[in-house]
Amino acid sequence: MTGDLDLVVSLDGVGVKRSGSALLHDVDWRVELDERWVVLGPNGAGKTTLLNLAAGRLHPTTGSAHVLGERIGRTDVNELRTRIGLSTATLAERIPSDERVADVVVTAAWSVIGRFRESYDRTDEARAHALLGQLGVGHLAERVYGTLSEGERKRVQVARALMTDPELLLLDEPAAGLDLGGREDLVARLAELAYDPDAPAMVLVTHHVEEIPPGFTHALLLRDGGVMAQGLLADTLTADNLSKTFGLPLVVQRSGDRWAARAA
Ligand SMILES: Nc1ncnc2c1ncn2[C@@H]1O[C@H](COP(=O)(O)OP(=O)(O)OP(=O)(O)O)[C@@H](O)[C@H]1O
Image 1 (tube, rainbow, N blue to C red):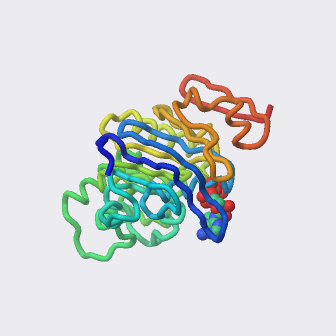
Image 2: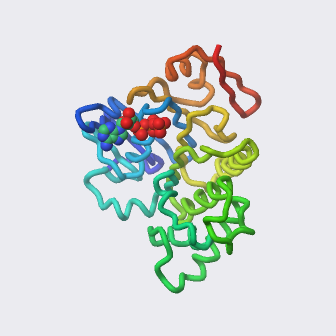
């Protein structure tokens, strides 16, 4: 147990090994309540592994991991899960395509995917509708999930992740597969959330600096399971750091509160 109540994630010397290879090694990372982190790195760098650790769904092989004050591996993970909002492609694949959109969100209150009860609490229904509205898809609440566009689905998935009023929100590539309009819309919604002082601590995994929403404060760069750089966005997203992380010379541009990168 850590003494700092503002500390949401705390990894100390964490390594994760599978089948003899190190997915992560020597990771020290702290996420505080009012911080919004972006995790960047090339394919296979260990980003999803890091997110699964922060979600309490994976135990470290070495070192120690605390999430919301609980030590992973020594706590009831089911209880911890209701305090964490998680949106990943793996979870999204399990959403039944014939499910009513409002039900996709409301079922998160019971940590299930797929409606299994006749009636849900009215306050839960109201919260699900409010969250869909906040994400700009309130008008789709009565539609069937399978009929939504990819962009609409992504926003429903974020609403679902927020359903339990989590203390930590983890988003794995929320803008993957979206067209430019869809990406910009989602980035704007996530920016609103990032600026909301009542919103949970946030960690967003992405491959692209263009997808970093305004309001995000910190970045962690991963390569081959190791941390290349971490800290405040402006200090961390340098051409040098990104070039080393992605293994090619890059130019990084900041325009207001948005970022862009291209080969040098
Ligand atoms: N259970 C496992 N056993 C062996 N190797 C694994 C296992 N799970 C993941 N890996 C490997 O660990 C590495 C890191 O995977 P991870 O999914 O964390 O990367 P990532 O940065 O999220 O990649 P991407 O951007 O492609 O989604 C990859 O090389 C992957 O193949």
